[in-house]
Length: 144
Image (cartoon, rainbow, N blue to C red):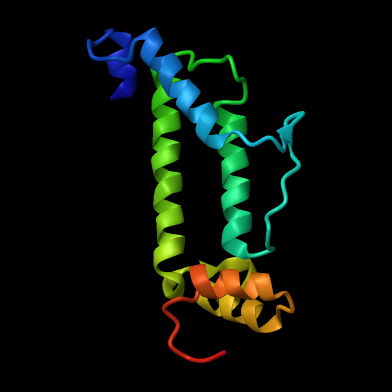
């Protein structure tokens, strides 16, 4: 469908200014000062699965769609691909954040909730434990 729109130059496609504005928003949202030389030099504050996932995803989106501060999306197709990837990324992040019982971490053979509980129990860092309890285990009813 998109190919047909582009082929016949259907009205309603974003202007060059709109493509530039969307690119700048992408850059501002996904850029991090530790992304340099096209390498991810960032470390999460805590080695917690959702934090690691979020950082990897942020770098992937930055590198793929908006790595140049002065760049722009070259065409409507690139812009649409970015918007689809952004929506998909948001949806996955929302699922991870909202329903840890149903998120299964395949490479660890465990649910995200159980992974967070295990991480909490094994942690010796009180700041990490507070972070886990506040953001990931707030609805967990049992005592640790």
